[in-house]
Length: 216
Image 1 (cartoon, rainbow, N blue to C red):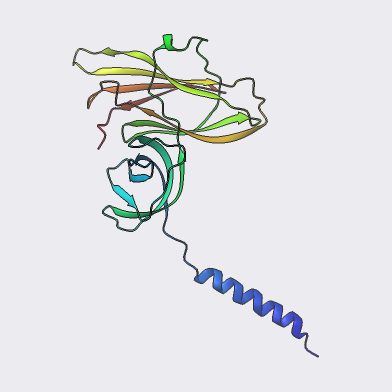
Image 2 (image 1 turned 90 degrees about the horizontal axis):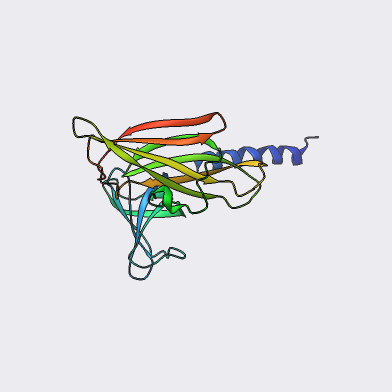
């Protein structure tokens, strides 16, 4: 006698697998972008680092935002028009992006506790960092140090920036992935100028050099 229960279970498994293969997930993008709110603190638009602008396809409030403000965020979205226009926003998470401060700003001293670097890149008028931080769930402090600039004989400037990171006595239990963006717009940089960015890691201080790119 045939085991119809077992045959039915196999048939159901095959059918389920076929249904999963037939389903097409949305063609979404996850990027660091700029977000602007309107007068009601709803998301007015997002602007990608290559200059594309998308407006949400429905009204979305940006939690704890202020009206008519600019934010740096990590956004997952589906463009509905490749040349710009409407987009469906699936996830929006704020990214810490304070303007670099002079060392005198840090009254309790400068902290450069080590962390891990996943990637660092220059785009959209920001130095962007994808970092791995050792934590046990405590709150760390992050900022950017403006260490000044020098000018060469050709009239080009080199801006020095350092990452501020205070572990705040948080035990190192596991690695948490975070994103930071250092805005460059107030540093009076021009095309051809350089940025030297330093970060303390578990392998020592890492130094990165970028040519300044004018934001689109």
